[in-house]
Length: 119
Image (cartoon, rainbow, N blue to C red; front, side, top):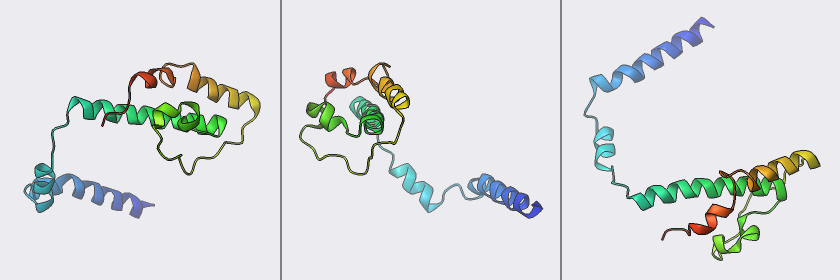
């Protein structure tokens, strides 16, 4: 047990102090040069993608199908999702999960209809 703690301490201290000894390494120059300026549209699109992912997760888990069935205009003719399966839930739990999707503002499908994907 003591060896695991010792290994953790060595790795932690090495990862903490190594940038102080090698501040201008090749990888740090690549990271600095690769930094980009994100526009407001990029940030909004990222947030909307997370919300679409969340809605897709709850829809597939509670009903077995995704946004492409519930709201085809959001998918814009894109391919159907692959990999999601209907969860084996009792009726009460299934209804609760579905209500999370429909009722709560963070999970509701209504706001997504006003924000088409940015291209």
